Length: 194
Image 1 (cartoon, one colour):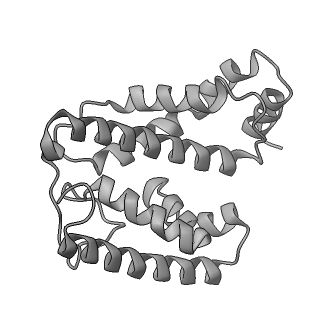
Image 2: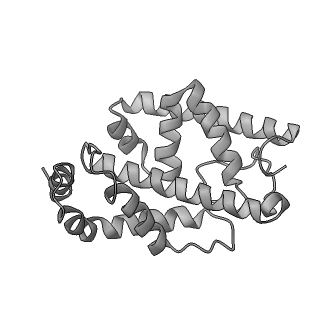
């Protein structure tokens, strides 16, 4: 059992100092994850990687003492999801500032959802991902881990407890499904950016 997993177990057991011992061990990886995630945001993003790390970290270990951690991979997967939700909420808040919030639709025929891009409409992707999760939850989990957490296919397979081949199949299906859904939404004027 590595140090991170040991401290996560201590957090589960209610050790009040465990969260303080965890942050120095995971901070650089969380900061790298946050910076990678923020690099995909549109220009003008006001949230800094450090603030994103701190907000996500507090959400993970601050108030939910009953959370069951299944190890290091589970923690970083949860951290990526927490960061995604923070950015989604911030994008929604910006969208309420003025009609449309400056969002615009993007033709994703030319865009790989895994590639970094300033044009990707995060809210439209989140809406499509929620619909995918309703239909194919495992495929949606693969997208979250690949796109938002930046995990490799091997890491995704390990995190989900599936074979690499199954992870590849889920990724291919999810990618095609999302590209089709985003294209259809843009054509019909659905979603937040139309």
